[in-house]
Image (cartoon, rainbow, N blue to C red):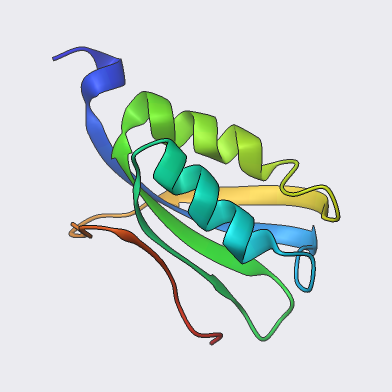
Length: 97
């Protein structure tokens, strides 16, 4: 199996001006466009958290896109870590936690 066709799951935390700028809606659209599964949600600390599950190349592309986000966002940084034991079957916006 090539690295690009390998299925991975990554949890990301996005910092900066990422709430109130349509970041979650943008993330859902981009993830669906790339064929990814998972979720995105606002955090009470002002960050956005997301889980991306799918082909390694598409997850990597999504993480790169998250570094800019939608036009009104001002992303400071994106932190990521592998996620395990997760097999979502769609992409959704989850409630704030």
